Length: 108
Image (tube, rainbow, N blue to C red; front, side):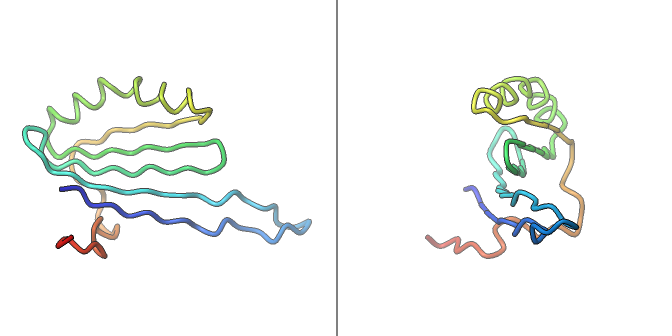
């Protein structure tokens, strides 16, 4: 089972001389828990031609495997004309973030 959350911020600025218009950012978060990898959470953000990918793997061997494949992910974003930043962390995301799937109807 995978849980997803997609959000978009409104960008910023009014376009006036004091405040430039910033590009809105889209964020997709998802979580999976499958064997033998265990729990993995991801956040992908897109803003203009910039892409950010953050992955959290609770099992150290899974995190090591994901780190070994960062270049493949980076290359895929570059092929789609995005400037990517990719980071892989061991453990769970920092506390305080809204849990992925909070508003998901798991019965469907």
